[in-house]
Length: 467
Image (cartoon, rainbow, N blue to C red; front, side, top):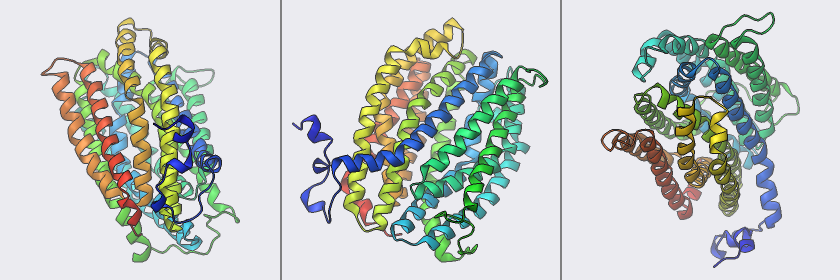
């Protein structure tokens, strides 16, 4: 049995026949990983925290307002699905080009990504705004809060191009390992969001009381600020990614094909992820307003733990991609396993926070005793899934960084698109477990993804992918 020190040592991460060059010391490996991961983890945590504060502020308007904002989440992510897919390709290819010391190729990839993103996001914004009512009715919005949800979604859709372009620019920077840029833009965005939430939801001073519309306007303003800040980073003459670098605006096949190769598989993943999440959300929404409000609150809290895994995933994707470009799959494997060990430590802390602070955490969002009691029980299930959730997120980041998005898409199709919604329906209704059933299905999904992604990563087939 490995000692704790041996478990965290670089020497225990690779077999002798896997090593093809010098390895960094354990201290340097963890330092390199954390250097990239901490800005993304902090960014994701603060974004999730601000989202939670956003929900808390909206919660002052009542449980119907929480449901109205919550029901728009999946339609918003569906509208961004193609952008998320594009960005997986942008991050992976930019990371490869940097590993190959091809600065021109990295800049050409970014510029192609920006053009594609602008076109796609404009289309998604138009569709979401125009068809807000039928979309929200389809996903299960109840009449008691439907009009508020429509108002919120229409304003949100106006901001989609700003949000999408910010995400694409930051995805390219992440491929270079420049995660502090994304952190800065999103922290600034969310500070704007929270300040104007305070001013516009209830009407403070000279600002009108706009309630749900105020929350949406604040979110849109934050997205615009994030875009402007991220765009400004491309006007630095000495930046690795810069508009001043002479790379042109080429959309030639040699630029588009690698992006398309990665992004097409990522799009399949996103389609099934969003269909699965939408089906899952719709199943829960039909359990009633109180139950759905509880679910939204617990999901907001869960996102605070997911953000740490997301930060580690960004670092894993960047380091795996760069070392694959440098023809060092052994270092890619090492950094993937480094991320796994850091994830284990963080997940253990989160487990105890959720377990012992569950009632307090839920009570921050509402003073409804019924919701607090149910939410506290649900948080026990959330705690049980933290290790699996964080682990599979990091493994997915490794596979995406290597360009193995096809396999990730297959896992997502099976687990999120089929297993989770079917298990949720079965446990919620025929078996009569209600919201408990929905969260048990979430744990089943996380476990399934963790096992399959671990098998794939350990097998090493991803290390032979050429981009």
